[in-house]
Amino acid sequence: MKEKIQEEFKKHFGGKGTLYASAGRINLIGEHTDYNGGFVFPGAIDKVIMAEIRPNKTDKVRVYSIDIDDNAEFELNEEDAPKQQWARYIFGICREIIKRGGTVKGFDAVFAGNVPLGAGLSSSAALESCFAFALNDLFNGNTIDKFELARIGQSTEHNYCGVNCGIMDQFASVFGKKGNLMRLDCRSMEFEYFPFNPRGYKLVLVDSVVKHELVDSPYNKRRQSCERVAKRLGVETLRDATKEALDAAKSDISAEDYSRAKFVIEEKERVLDVCDALNRGDYETVGQLMYATHNGLSKDYEVSCEELDFLNDIAKECGVTGSRIMGGGFGGCTINLVADDKYSHFIEEATKRFNEKYGHEPKIYDVVISDGARKITE
Ligand code: ADP
Ligand code: MG
Image (cartoon, rainbow, N blue to C red; front, side, top):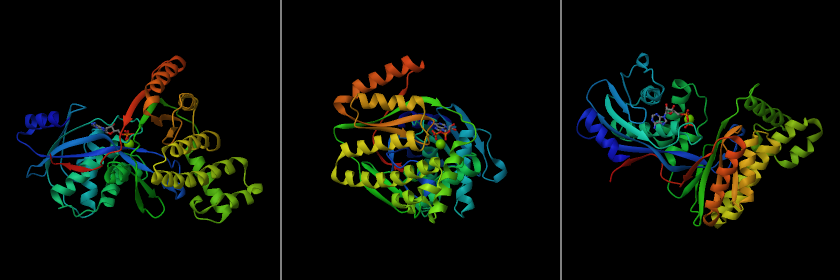
């Protein structure tokens, strides 16, 4: 990828710029916890967006996307927003830096990536973080702190791309560190690295390539359930609720709200249990907790779907250590922790049986926990 980018940069702009990269991400555990003030547990992966960038001493930004084979050119005022969606991510990053009092001047850039688009690995956060990191280095002497870089990416999604996302994806992309996952506390925004070096296991995503569009916005309904229960229990968010308090109030909560809250409270505990297990290097326990999360998402939170439950069942049958839905649900990927000697059989079975049943093969993405945003110096 690096050579291709350098070749295209030379072709479009002549000479050389500086290379930067940032990564997509996975979330090992901690689902539907962010809006409940709980924990998420992401890590950056070995799939990146890489860009070569050079200031051009003008007010104009000129960018070429290798993967889309398209050029964009824009100035840095609010009314200069480019039409192409991919370029709006870059424009948004520039604008958000400027809005915060930072500096961005004209530059030339060529970029490419291998984070699959729209598969739940957050290619958009990789793109945002790559440019945010680069523009901080090139024009701001790295004075913008890393959390602010993540927020700049998040605001770009909100203000220029119409996606009302949380902070996890950009956080993971910016702070990612090889061999480490990060437990982010969505209430205090404090985080901690935990070692993740599953020797003898692979981490693999199985993408169902289905996305069920649902009526009457199930996400909002889940949120409302959580808010209702929190209010009933007298806590700000379910982060502060206990299973005991929930059970004590069971008789005046609907059965549905009870199940939703139960999942959220248990999921918080599971993240903490995963941290303990990782500190011991106990990946079998990590795997069991992943299955428990899947079960909770499917039975209590009810955000799974037939295809994802099917993939989870196959994983179990193939002796996969851990498997669960990753992301909001109703489609997308499962994330699987698989012992090396079970890997080929699992992938073959999942591919064959899913295809027989649903008429298309799932997509398989192996991932390794790697560094996030960085300058490429070698
Ligand atoms: P994801 O879940 O992967 O973040 P999004 O829809 O949020 O999916 O973001 C995908 C968008 O990000 C693409 O439509 C495109 O505009 C931009 N993008 C991601 N990767 C690339 C790339 N390699 N080249 C150009 N644009 C990209
Ligand atoms: Mg995205």
